[in-house]
Length: 589
Image 1 (cartoon, rainbow, N blue to C red):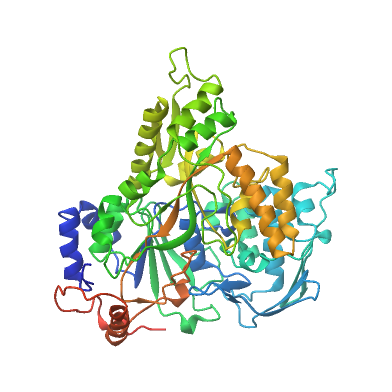
Image 2 (cartoon, rainbow, N blue to C red; image 1 turned 90 degrees about the vertical axis):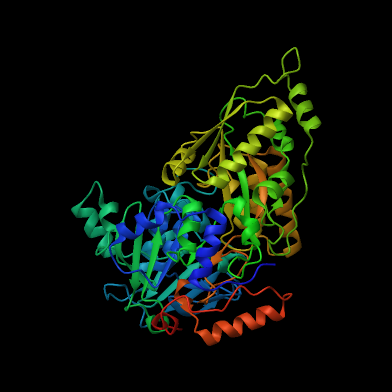
C-alpha cells in the first residue's frame, strides 16, 4: 500500500511519476482564468447541457444544479436519509396519499424574493407541460391527474382536456404546499429529493421569455439574471471553460455554508483533469479516471473506490436493421467478455453486469437472464440466418457511439475487438463531445451508444421505470406492453415482497429483449483532497456542497489517525504540511 501524501509537493511528485511533465493544459488554464482561485474547484466532465433543473438528466448537470437549487426535501450526504430542505416540516395523511409541506419562513430566492408554495406549484406544472419537454416529467405521474395533464389523455386513452385543477398539486397557503398521489408510493420520498424537483423563479423566467422570445433560455441562465434558491449563486460563466459560484447570502442556511466560492471546470479529458488535480488546480475529480493510472492511485488516501448504484451499458437502437432483431442484440450481449473489460481496462473493482440493476439496490435481487458464450452468440446468428454460406457474419458494419473520454474509447475498442473475434462483426467507433452526444442519442442517431444510469434513489423503480414505453430516458425505440404493465403494477404495490417480484419479472423481460446491453456495475472514483470535510461517501455518490469545508490540521490528523487504525502500516514519504493557507483551512462549518 502506498503512503498517504498530503502536500502539494507530493501531488507534483506523483504527477511526474504517473504522467511525466505536467501538460500544457495547466499553464493554459492559469493564464486563461485571470482571477484568484476559488475556495473549491472540481470538474463536471465537460460543458454541461443546461442550468435549468427541468432540462437536465446527466450527473455533471446534477452536481451543478445542487449548487444552485434546493427542493422541498434533501438527502443527507452520508446516510441518504430524507431531511428538510426548503420545507421545514411536513405531514402525511393516514392513507399515505396526501403530503402537506410547510416552507421555511426565511426561505428566499437569490434576489431576495420570498420562496413561496406557489413557486413550487408553478415549477411542478412547468415540469408537466409538454412544451417544457422535461425528461423527468413522467416521474411526477404518480401524482393525481399528472399523467392526464401531460398527455392530454384519460386513463382509457381517450382525449381529455388538460385541466390543472385536476392535478393534485396545490399551494394551499403562502407557505403550505399539498401534493396528493394517485396511490401510496413507497419511493416518493427519495424521488422528491432528486435535483430535478427544484423550483425555478417564475418572474425572472417569464420576463426574459417576453423580452427574448427566441433565445430566452440563453439569457435566463446567464450570471446576473439567473435567480436561484440554493446555497450558491452563479456569478461567472465562460462557455467551455468554467462556471464560478459564490455563496448565496439569501440562502436560509448561508451562515453554515463554509465555502465562499466554487469553480466547476469544463474539462472533457480525464487525463487533463487529473493533471489539474495533481497540480492543485482542482480539489475533486470524479468519473472515468484513465485506467492505466488506477493501479498507481489505489492505496492513496484521496482515492477510495466504493460500490456505486450505477450501471454502464450500451443502448441499442432497435429501430435500425439488423438491431431490431432480438437474436442480434442477444448475440452482441453474450459475445462480450466483461471480466476482461473490468480487470484489464478499468482496474478499480468494477463488477461485470448481467443485470441492469446493481447489487446494492436495497433488498431487491436481479434475476440472471443471460451469460457469456461466444459459441452461443455465433449459434444465435446462424439460427437467425444471419451468416453467409461460409459461416461468416452477414451483418452490416455497426457504429459504436460514445462521448469523448479516454476510458469510453478504451472500452469501445475492446468491445469492438471482442465482437470481431467472436462474430466476425465490423464495428467503427464514433465519439462526440457531451452536448452533441446527448442530442444524437435523443434523436436515435446511432446504432449502439455508450450510456450509464446512476440511480436517483436506491430503489428498483429508479432503474426500471426508464424503459417503459415513451419514457424520455428510454432513447432506444424499444417498447413492450407486458413490461409496461409490470412496472405500473409495481409502482402502486404496497406489499414489499410482491413489489420486488413484479420488478424482477419486468427486469427479466428487459434482459431477454436487451434494448440495452449491461457491461459493468460502477464503483465511485472520487479523487478528493484529504482536507475536504463534509464530503459524502454513499452508494449514490451524491454530494451536498453546502456541507463542504476545509479541515484544520488538527482535524485532518485525527481523521488520518482513525484511518490508520483501520489499515496496515504504510511507508512514510515525508512530513505532512498544509495544502492551503490557514485562512482556507479555518473556514470550517
